[in-house]
Length: 107
Image (cartoon, rainbow, N blue to C red; front, side):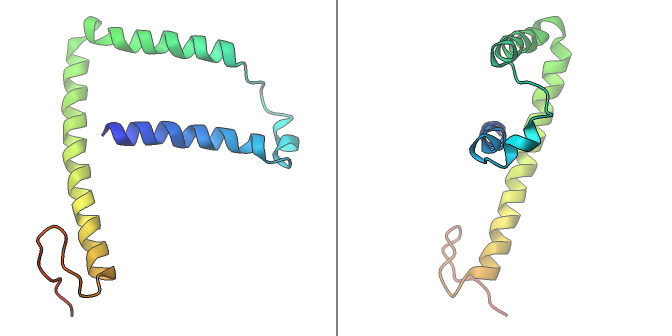
């Protein structure tokens, strides 16, 4: 689950950085609100500190959140298994299955 959170974070940073590399984007960003990095970082640090304290103020929220993340993790694992099986049936050319070690069934 942490992989998804970290991946989303880095993917967001890439999307934010791409317009800086394209000269055509500068014209479109002239009307965008200004980006104050210092103030943004200070706000992010304060928000993170507040989020860390929410478990002290309301422990039931953290308990429900951890149960939710556990359930989502199980569903993500099952989804990954289904995706692997689907891709294995579509792209396997008589190779042995990495999970079971058997040959895939072909139609």
